[in-house]
Length: 208
Image (cartoon, rainbow, N blue to C red; front, side, top):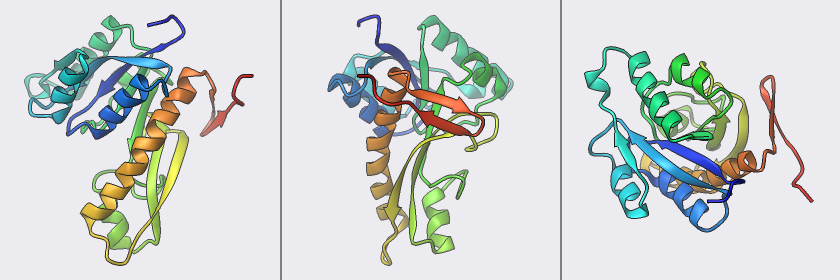
């Protein structure tokens, strides 16, 4: 790894499709960086097998053995710090992040959410979109703050809602867009092109 490449830590709780998209982006040189650590709170997470296949260290931290969310996040922050991580990417991480982790990596934590924020924050966003009857939904990559799904927005992608969509079909099409825009957002960070000004994220022009 060259010195101008960022070190990425990924937190994942599920199958790890966005984790795989980040792995692929690094391997295909679409991200000037390398995942150096995966952390999961789920011993059955598909992210574990994906990390093993990619040769990336994966650490399991059992939140049920810890007295509080803050205690869990302290262990996560310690592990990320030991790995000298530059950017933390949440990829299907089913935990609310506390100020303990946010303050340790201020302005350096990203998340991808399956809706066009600020619409449909929280869980089951595709189901929320279908129940509300919207014609369009999508996905959002944003910086993580103490407001759940409320941080400054980096990139978004729009997904039309079909009349015959189920939650599963809509979620699948949203995920396809997540796998595109999440690596792009990470690359913008790696290129130092993201500037947070209040609630807005400004994207600097590409170098050269």
